[in-house]
Length: 325
Image (tube, rainbow, N blue to C red; front, side, top):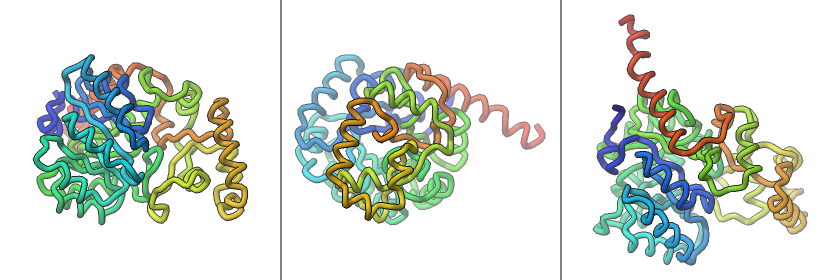
């Protein structure tokens, strides 16, 4: 049976964490992932009011006693009450991303809640090591949604080399067993998977977005800033991009951002209308390059079993073939 230090640290069977996709990784997905033996995460989003978050925490606990966590896009302002509520609720872990994690790691010390620090740069990886994160999520640019510009393979390996005893989990471009096996061979202790769970029955986003993921190929996404700029999203735009499935909106405005911003209000309305109508030519669908590996919508439990079974088979047989055994 495939097991790593991450499994022992979190009390799970499979070295997989579902990405806390904001507002769409709800109790349903976190429950399904945790019940199946991996580590489910609720995506808290940018809402400073912890009411929604706590409702989903309680909903998971009604369905399973297995460990799960909550993830924040921590660059958003005003999340102090929501983060405190998650700590008070004693979820197994809280994930933070897009910030220097030091203060947030210090805040959780002594609480019994483990802290995942998702990092996109070596500078923040070093800060997470120094601050004593429980797990470091090394996110490469193949990831869907907000990410940086470093490739997963080289970035994960570089973080593993400085992490010491802290488990490193790989994120970005992993959607199947060969991907999981590959990052384990780099020294990662598990995989952080988002896009594959977008194409799950339990993902709470719209069905039309799931359809776009299973139709996309590996070269059908783009790392852009157009949606963040139009919406005034508070990401560090010199570092962070937003990987979405290419569409007419990105074809029109990527590379023409200054001109785009002269029409910001109009385009914000267009995006809102398109999102409500399920018009993927204008509305964003955040997904990674792994979309090209996904061709079906399945229950999360099936997805997990398939990934782990494939990885175990590869790790059991492939080395023997390569080494002439």
